[in-house]
Length: 369
Image (cartoon, rainbow, N blue to C red; front, side, top):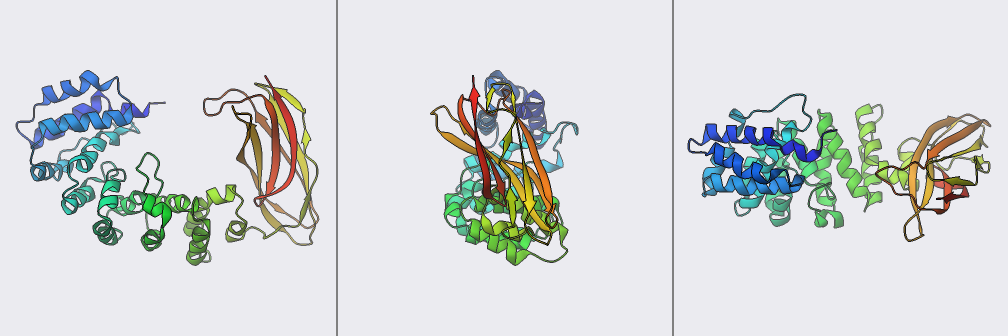
């Protein structure tokens, strides 16, 4: 798998240099590329973005408006790179972030340039500093952008305002009070582009981490019969609160409210396992009603951490439809083989079964080194 930082490699630098040399006759391609490449291999992704911005500033007009005039022609000469390269859009990242580095005193002109450039690489990171400094100007612009012909610009509204955007500056004002964004999201919820609708769902999922009731109530207001696209959006938007077992989310998603079932004790393949082995577990779920019930079945493993305390991690087991008085076997195997994303420690662990977020059975087992 290609490392993310290699989205800004020598080929990307050459594409940047080629574009600016076509728009600025005195652009020193050789010196520009040499300055960047001399240091590039030692830098990680965000460091590469910052390094390229600094070198660009040395080779572009010192008048910000003259630089913006060049930026606002960039798409006419831009080399989009190899279609087989999933990171080819990264070449435009430092150009867009340049605006946040040097254009903070000129919000309206900078926002207009974001509108033009965001289809090359999303301006969702760069625009956040403007949202923090100029909330009213940005909000007024967003009300226009949600009606824009370009889905990249419409998505910039929903993605740029996300309270907890990964890699982005946290917008603490929206973490505390996300209500100003709800009308924007509401307009975009039925957008013709899945690219935009997925961003709306991710934005709501951000909000749900701090305001689950607001997200549930918003989704209830949005729901319409036989609208599969909106159903998908709501399901994607509520994925965190489903894992957290928030009681109100399951009926929102069409699952049985307070299902009537009994769960047998959890059967384990062994009460003691060693690093690298699997723990197999199973139980029986029996319906106690004369009607069919639908439910979400998850399991939780309480992992021992370095400080010897346990930390819960929720995993998806299955979604089921259980007929009247029927019994279903639930079974799963979990591997304790070493992986890069989780470190295992010896000690007493626990497995728990959740039905619509509620615990119904649990059992302990020992992980030994």
